[in-house]
Length: 488
Image (cartoon, rainbow, N blue to C red; front, side, top):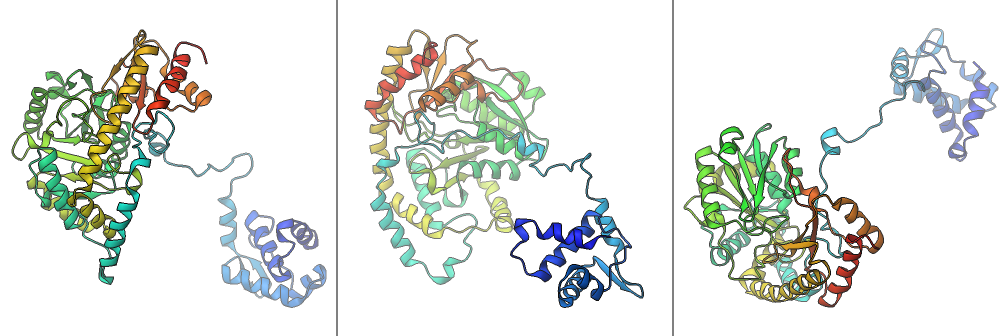
């Protein structure tokens, strides 16, 4: 073996130029063994001989040999130092160039996860983004500072997995008054947001392979959560009264969970009728299923009084009620909640106690004070007025510039509406990409919200308006109309 050539080539690499001599020699021999250049069982030269050949100090050779021996790459014997058999097995595991090793990557399941809606951007018309500039930051900061000032050292530890008692009580009180919920604090569980709530529902209340009904078109964040839990999503058609399961669905596609957004269907904005809500609750009881009611933006009702939630329509309804402060306050808060039936609350509390240590005590206490002090209700009233003005401006601009080719749906509530194109053959995905590339406008395609194997006929765009000033609506809609009509 020509050790001089091996060592010279190693030293010539820029990455090794500044290494100490003994480290250079150790790593050179180590790489030679791992690559197979120094084969298993090969005898290495005596330390004096190798030092003379390479022109290095003998101590450097002794250091390299000792390190290799401690790592198991060489063995000492009467014949001197030899390459250990273990090294040969390492070499065998290294693929040759003609058979490259598979690259490390995400699992196929993870690679197929649908993308979540674009709430991470402030581009018009990104859905789910509130008017962040209108949030009372100074008032919130004072409440947060007060919460931190009252924390005791022991309260810096993990907190109650169900959440701070003060916040659970504040949420329960708000829901009883504002949403007609039948709830007490013991049924409320604090989460990191709606996505965290969905993930918890999927894993706590269903097993792999169970069926979950979803609105079609529907919320892709829920699809991601259910797919990650290995549940089978069954798309149920949506009409003007919301989710519309047929009698055959109850017989042939018996669900374990039923996910719905009844107060403002995502993405098309339908409001589920009272008759449909009661029928869904009754069907869930008979099927032994749980309804997941995602009430993500129902605080913002623009036409008429707020609707009562499904959870409060019947005593101990089989409903898991989900809410979030990402839309009403700001997404970075990362606080949501879920309300579970009384009979399930103890079991869920025990599960979380075993598996989900929680913290962020100060944030939760500040939020509790924000609610109890009346600041939350005040902020909601201000945002309702603002969002109504922005909704009106968007609807008027759409009617003027696209009224002959598209229809607005779902503008009665929430922070977004759906613009459905009359021509169902339009490639709304391509148009959406063109809007972003040419004008920086985010208008997610409705066709991408299909769920399950059943086709859904919606073609058009999801348009969030909460973060778009009134004066910007018409110029933006003109650009949208130009792309839809084939211009720029």
